[in-house]
Image 1 (tube, rainbow, N blue to C red):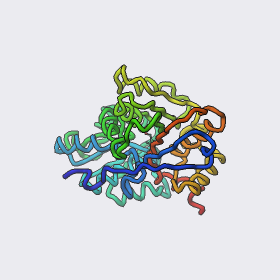
Image 2: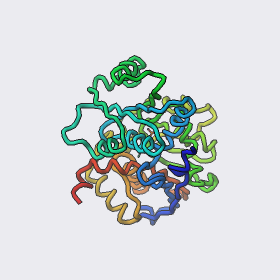
Image 3: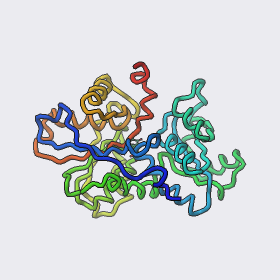
Image 4: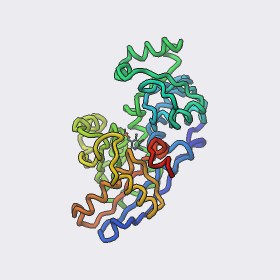
Length: 308
Ligand SMILES: *Cc1c(COP(=O)(O)O)cnc(C)c1O
């Protein structure tokens, strides 16, 4: 079976013209990874697919990974497992909630087994010894299960992200810069590799105080992959934090362009662009491609989108 026959491997690129760029010399295109598939949205499929190929090659039919109660990664893994015939286990950070999130309900409906662990246990998610304990509790042997790092990151995650631009048939010569929101930076690293220096790649971390990300990302790159940088001051207060300005901006942006954004990642990226344009930071003509990394399922966790 080819995974792409089930999930798809093409996404559109759209020209958009929100009011905040109208008097600037910027040509703005968006690569709509959110439109890859009706439930598996965004970069998380690209981060997963080489892990799943690895499982398939090794004859492993169970996938185990880690995330919070609104994890885009566990959501994508549960859906992909359901569609492609893998059993899935989600190790979820924190107590089992009295009212499970819409994400957890989806994951369970797709057959994911959910195991809740305390925050202190969750901190051991990169320790092989912790994996052994978990598998033991589940009466599974390590040969039966592929343990995928949180977020689908790691070398296999980065490798899958090398295919992001080609999914949109992006012609690199058409762009000066490519921008995206970053968590771990694995997606950014894959995109940087695939551009081979043809465009400047700019990452916007959504976490506060992540100077270490530069080194984390560099470990996946060759020294010659040097046309990229991070913008560390557009996190709106930190991971999962929002501001009234951010929420209002996302709603207005969707009204103007028809492109929905999420408040954790893509909303912060677009607001960063608006701030840069308005502060006079971008006076030169620029052909800009933004990567819409998806994450829209996570909007359901914000009351601003539940009330209307
Ligand atoms: C996970 C995620 C990211 C960040 O991906 P990294 O590879 O960890 O940098 C960006 N956008 C969305 C919507 C995500 O779900």
